[in-house]
Amino acid sequence: MQPLIVGVRFAQIGKVYHFDAAAIPDIQPGDRVIVETTRGRQLGEVTQRIEKPSPPPEGKWKPVERRATPRDLLLRQTWQRKEVEAMIACRQRAAELKLAGVKIIAAEFSFDGVRLALMYSSETEEKMDLKSLRHDMGKLYPGTQVDMRQIGPRDVAKLLGGLGACGLERRCCSRFLTDFSPISIKMAKEQGISLTPQEITGMCGRLRCCLVYEFEQYVAARKELPKRNKRVVTPLGEGRVVDLLPLQMTVVVEVPEVGRREFEREQLEPWDELEALRRKSAQPCENCEKKEIRE
Image (cartoon, one colour):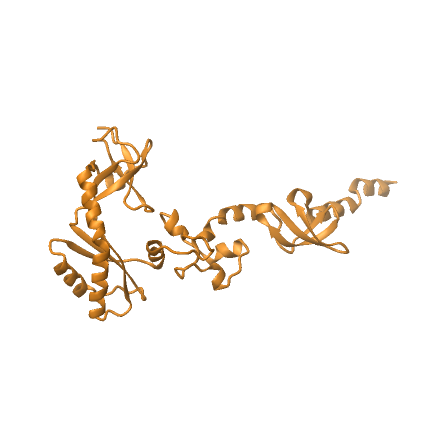
């Protein structure tokens, strides 16, 4: 049977995973399906049909089990309503056990209630011993497999939502980011952004995700523009580059007796190349020298 690969998402703003839906050839984006994952059976939404899929991971794709029925959707809603209750109960038990530095962020049941994942964050990167807490929550929800899942600061910000550092009503991670890209200080430097913590740090305490949005455009633009302190020739005379405006493809040049002026890239010529031409034109012609000697 020819595989039919579809993308399935389990959260509204979540990562898309690929499954084989060959058993349901008329499946379409928007359909709800039941699939088997490493975290048990889950109910997800089909987001896309992939015509030319990449090679499958570990030899093959996991199959889509079936379409979700109205009963499945109702069952999922029932367990969703119990997630807040489970989170509060876990927080209370963690406080009773005096688990310092552990914050219970959210609870998530599988669609059939067979598994309960409790997401928590820790002030340290070290793995916490939460066997007692997991055991107590297992007693509270008999017949349910309880997992304690540690998440990072960015995942915490994504789950909690709230006002962004830039002033937007919702943070980027809660609106559309499905994956977190690696962010570095170099990205801020390349874009000329102030390196003060208030300017480059998000509400999660990590470098802002938006630093990566225009990074590639800045890098590409800077390759075509002269560097700072480079001597160039402008329509107003020779000068030195003092600033770059990469997204506008212009530079600011300090021209003697004129001041600072902004020029487009096409208006500039490298000073060293022009100087080399001047020197070459000023050198005496070797053939002319030989002619003079013979005479």
